[in-house]
Amino acid sequence: MSEPDNEATTRQPSHVDGLESAEERTDSHPHPPVDEQQQAQAGWAPADSATRQELPPVVPPGDPAHAAGPGTAQGDPRGGLPYDQNQQPFPPLGPPQPPWQQAQQQAQQQAQQQAQQQAQQQYAPGQPHPGAQPQAAHPVDDMRRPRRGRHSVAGPDELASAQLIKPVKRRPQSGWRKAVYVASGHLINPGESPADRRRRELIARVNQPLRGCFKIAMLSLKGGVGKTTTTTTLGSTFASLRGDRVVAIDANPDRGTLSQKIPMETTATVRHLLRDADRIHRYSDIRAYTSQGSSRLEILASEQDPAVSEAFSEQDYRRAVDLLEHFYNIVLTDCGTGLMHSAMKGVLDVADALVLVSSGSVDGARSASATLDWLDAHGYGGLVQRSVVVINSVRPKMSSVDLDKLEAHFGARTRAVCRIPFDAHLEEGAEIELDQLQEGTRLKLLELGATVADGFTSP
Image 1 (cartoon, rainbow, N blue to C red):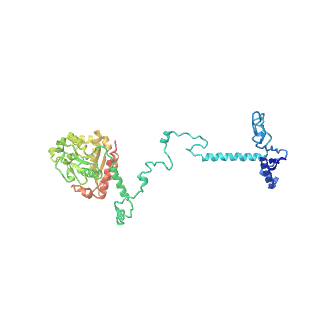
Image 2: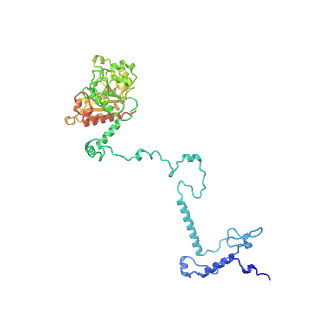
Image 3: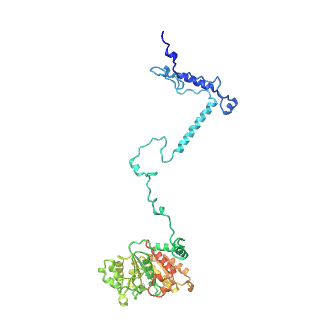
């Protein structure tokens, strides 16, 4: 007798058994009954027997229907049925779909729209689109394009001192603020006062950069108005605040007194300088012909003999200035009162700026106005527009002259007008020390220096 077949005793599991077991598990847990009214409110209803479609039978994987050999029909992926070659690619539209299928399609469309919106929101400018193909980066573009992120190189502005260092209050220079600062042992710093801030701004204007040599003509048609004194105080202000060299030359043919405003260090005059001009090659050589005050202002004196000083001509002045401008940055010329003097033409021709000194009296103002008229009439209109008028030795409480109207008159014709108050130290007529001047006088001189220095950058 033959042994029973192994297939009869041992049966291999198949896909059909899996489906049958799944059906048994499904039937073992039936769904709860659904109310037809609830289904109608939800917008869908189960298809009836007339519209229900029968599912095709499941074909096992090993069935020949799955094999698509030559000359055989291909399997339909929807149900394993043979593919009909005569079937149209797009079947004709059938009857209207049931409501539950329409609701399902609408839900799918909404889900697709939401997915597209999320993809667009995730796309940021400067980044490739999610669907775009990555492009090979050009090596030159990578070198030119700045890298960003934690490995980016900081720019020069990010490491500037103003960005890294915290601002510190400036130390007060005067008033109760300075007293509090000193009394607290520098622990309490109220900061600088408005007056200190104003002074600091004026000093910054005085120290404006200067290229070459700037020549200033100090002029007055009337004597005794403080022209020489203003030359000394203005030159001392420049020399004490600026780091360059400042010199004042006495071009007064009538025995000028400019050399008496500072301690005399030498008896040499402009005549000796012109005589030895060929031997001057360095600053130390020319320094032997000038006297220097405590403010660092140097003065080149004129000849004290009136007979000799008359010989100081236009050519002599030009030679002297050409020599001085090689060693000095600012040259002030203390002119005489005569406009028709031979040296006056040379002074006005080479001057970069003009300071016209006047008193606060009526006759002093008339003389200054007549000087401007003469300059306009003789072709120096541009110099008049660049000039600064100084109203000297002002005593507002002791004068009946309307200084505001006087200032408005000169302000309409010149670049600026400055008032210098009366000061007892200047009235002495002796050597001038800036430290002995009153605080108000020093401030006004500082304003005058800043106003003149504003012309350093003018064409």
